[in-house]
Each structure stands twice: as C-alpha cells, then as structure tokens.
Length: 181
Image 1 (cartoon, rainbow, N blue to C red):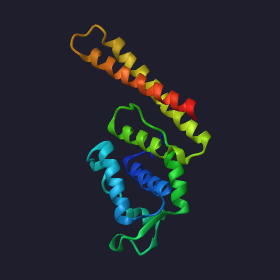
Image 2: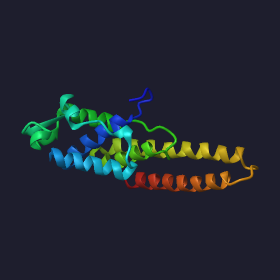
Image 3: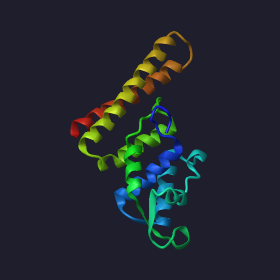
Image 4: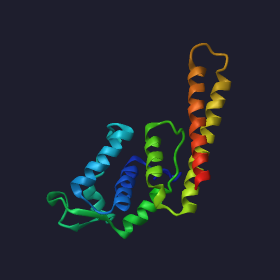
C-alpha cells in the first residue's frame, strides 16, 4: 500500500482473489483464475499493472491454500487462509486516491461495492462514508477548475460541467446507499 493507506494495483488483484474466495467459497484453480481475469478485464480493460500477480504467489505467501491437490498443475481446490482473511479485511478498508474518475480507482470502488456486504454494518458505513467524502472532494476540485477557466474559450468548462453532474449523481447514490444501511 502507498503511505496514505491506498491500494496499489497488485493489492487490488489480491482483494479480488481473496474476496472472491471469501464470498463464493473454495474454487478450483482454473475457475478462480478465470473469474478474477473476467472481473478485472470488464472493469478496467486489459492492464499491464494488474497482470502478474499469480495465484501461486498468494499460495506461497500463505494467503490462499490448496484444499486438495497442489495447485495449477492439478486444478486444486483453493480457499483463503486465516492470514488471507486478515489481509482481505485490511485491503477492503484501504483508502481511495483522488481523482475518482481514473480507471484504477474505478476498480477499487467496484471491489469495495462487490465485497462490502462481507463487512459488519459499522465497517460498511465507514466505507460508504469514505466513498462519499471522496466524491465531495472531487466536486470541490472540479468546481475550482470551472471557476478558474470560466472565461476560457473552448469546451473545457462544458466538459467539466458534465463531469460535475456525474460526480453529483454518484455522491447522491452513495448517500442513498448509506441511508439504506
């Protein structure tokens, strides 16, 4: 993690793997690899930053374990270890980095929302509050840009206004989610 306790791409992959196993239960190696690859590709598209974290590395680090067989070679059934559950809890609570519109943060938001129900109610509310605060900060940043470039010719302020509208919609959605919790 970065010094500000935010996720790096390698850790996002760990969160997908661990969260998937905790949510769905033990999976065969090939099924888990396929599920992780599908989710990452559909949220972010192909990304070199997200490639390279292997299930074998997570096994070596003691975060997942083969419940039968040995690993990739025999399509072992994989599950999270106690250390993997602790790592999941640390990763799901990590901060997001602004701005929220970049592809990696979109992945982290998607992961938090995918696995949010695995946390207790108070932790869920903390995470939603963190996501809402991120969008409030983003609105302030975008508003400052609009103010600074209000007299400029071109289409920047129009584009920024569009971005502000989307950010306001996301903030409203997170506030509604908080009300439902």
